[in-house]
Length: 280
Image (cartoon, rainbow, N blue to C red; front, side, top):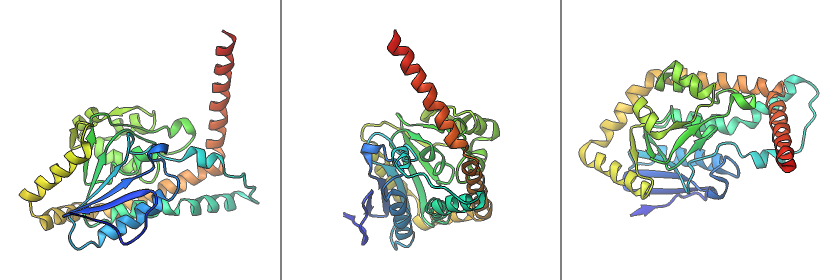
């Protein structure tokens, strides 16, 4: 029987089914973009499940056809422009704006339970970069893919993803993905060792539950959690440093207005293409 949270969540679905805790992004109309309260809700739910007395697995997944499309571009576009007295003030303001994301990464890095990422569909941007290298187990629907436009938008690999993907798939493959924006299918990532299992998209969430319940019937929960703890213990300091290094590098890109310039260039190209088509 499923149990609910003691807290109210607006943009995630929280459930506990036996020894399995579930956090499901629930903004399907926006492809589970990181808007609304989705990040804060997820941080709180991770904290709650971290202290849950019965669970072994924490599953992070999404509602609808996407796992997550990353940054909520529409919400960001609607924010008013702010003038800063100097570059230092601009950087400090940006660093303050990403504090929730940093705490999300720390919450995953320090999570005591076995963290299972269940990619129910495509993941783009932060959705493709923040979680995959930190999760202990990655399961994916056969329709899932990962893609990041960091370089195209004048950004950098976010929140430790450069280090995480380097360790997971090697430098050359990580560069192809993070630097060039190569789209990677679930099947490719399974063959490279980043994804543990690929399941059919139809009935994916139920298949994930059945798979994890099977593991619980075979393996001791405390032993699995101890395996995770011992594996991650020497990695913790490096992972956290990578998160802060990436945050600092990302802030500098925003101070330089690089993303703003790239967005303007791309919008100009799209407008020119649109005008060319209208003349045909």
